[in-house]
Amino acid sequence: MEKNTRIAERNRGYFRAKNLLVLNVVSSPGSGKTTFIRETAVRLNGKLRVGVVVGDLATDNDAARLKTSGIPVIQITTGTVCHLDADMVAKAAEQLPLDQLDVLVIENVGNLVCPADYDLGENLRVVLLSTTEGEDKPLKYPPMFHSANVAIVTKSDLAGAAGFDRDQALGNLHRVSHHAQVFELSAKSGAGMDGWLNYLEKQLAGARA
Ligand SMILES: Nc1nc2c(ncn2[C@@H]2O[C@H](COP(=O)(O)OP(=O)(O)O)[C@@H](O)[C@H]2O)c(=O)[nH]1
Ligand SMILES: [Mg+2]
Image (cartoon, rainbow, N blue to C red; front, side):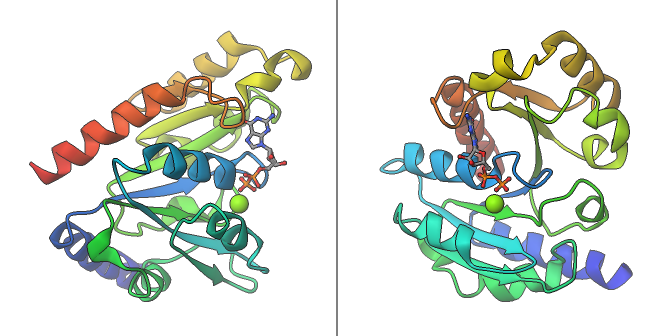
């Protein structure tokens, strides 16, 4: 863990030198990480360039999905490991054209437990909570939600069908991650994406100032 923290600090310095804003995106499997990252990259296209490092236990399906949208992407397959670590990210990021990018997004392995403990050298940890997975996830997985800088309530288009209790979910989020910036959006319909993208642009400007 100590070694990871050391490499994460090195990553942070390296990414800063490259003028990058780096996001570590975490959530349960199927919350919508890949879809959210793709929509973010596509909507920023022309303004900001986004590259992706994506982690899964197996398959390069997510990398293939992102590639079809023209997004530079490197897949890490972890085998049995349930999180990415700073060393894996360092080695994968080297294979991306970092000098041509503004934002590097790391899609972590889908689960709300292991990734919480591993600093990757990111600027912002972004946790997704989809309207279909239950309002109580922040209460059940406090370390992950507590460590997040940004919480994205996603799949807002499915809230009605899932009987999503918005007040309860936001209340739970605020209890565990009171400091996190919250956005409610649908990556599928695009509703709410603008607020998130404006925030991201401001964060990049701030990191470069
Ligand atoms: N209706 C709806 N479906 C979504 C949204 N975001 C993702 N999905 C769907 O949810 C499923 C899992 O999404 P994916 O991006 O692969 O999630 P990941 O496992 O967290 O990377 C896919 O079928 C997506 O099409 C959304 O905002 N609205
Ligand atoms: Mg994915």
